[in-house]
Length: 544
Image: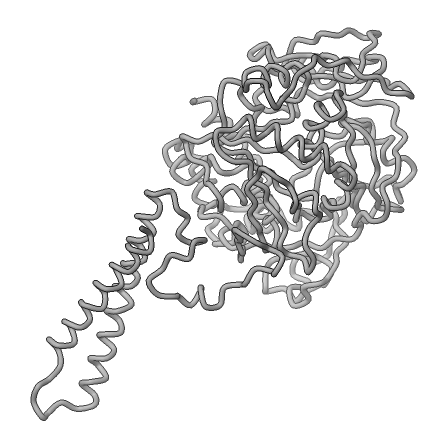
């Protein structure tokens, strides 16, 4: 049917050109080469205009039938972009998306080597890690209580069915409060030998979706699911249109997901099976097509899922970017997302019959003596993870990567969904002449600086802002860095002016902070884009 539309438009185009030529061709002997050349130009222009209109009609009709015309190759005539389009690697079988926008920031301090055991005594669950939760949830334990891994710690008063559980067994030693008596974290001193709560028996292959949802709500598995728009805890009353998992990360110093998931193949596949029962659509895996070799068979051999290959610079690994190119989020759609280790934790509820929050964390950054991978549990204490691995104490510690991670300290705890800690130099020193010096030590996306001539340059990061906040000017920078059909600068200004209609029209539902983090890094105006976006998301969410 789709090919029929293409042929029809092509036939119409040629008939129109034929009539145009017959009407314009001189019949007398005075026709000269100049006239013929002008006629040829007119015919050529008319031909390409008609082809362009024809292609647009094909795309509109394909969209009505739920077909991605770009990736299906529906076109009346190949364009320049199609001719020079990057070809997929031989191992990338199936749907493939080559992204041209973006930028890779290469930094010192990449984690390498085998995965080591981390000796951590204290762990915490932090309610602020779960967006959409009341600032003061109902705490079900007291200081001095003994808990097992998987025992209930607290629940949201607005959504009491979702139980937030302990990642380890041990003694509750603190319930710390933040501003306005909000719960900052609940700290557990871990046992040397972990004990696990005995879970209710359920067969996911034969149970109903409602029974499976009830099981996950009670055992802590539901807390691993994040819902978009807004990146909040998934609603148990909604059925997602699709579920998306990115199997690679392109952020600076990001962990190698092929490495950290070795040995967890069974739990990962079981997690995918469970997710397949929770959605009305598909479970999508975003696969890495940037390397010379294919990614791990943990992902490529996964069953019961749809796969899409992506190549390109950061943020190609962001799940939000992948969603945009597979099934864009609208005001009427709901999707869920998970990290690869979250999927394995979900699957372990059934393969191991326990809430196993084991997590491999990449300790990265130039201010570490030895960047490495360590094995621990969700919510591990930052100071104990780092140990004596710091080169000095004048550093900035981040839970996450340098672009979208949150500032933390050695007394704090790893965020619930993070699998990376980054340690960089504290940038509180003055740089003579600042950006006026054309040095080769500062990462930049601007081609005005000579450093951009050396694409493989590895930098030592610090937290200097390299300028102060300035007027919010239109530069066109963001569109070159965000591989999505969105105008970030216009969206940010709509948020600042509280224009709800423009926010929704400009695609705020498709974004979260990590998607605009690279734009913030490159921003000439030094605007806090991630903060602005979160304010906009919260405003739209509150409006319903």
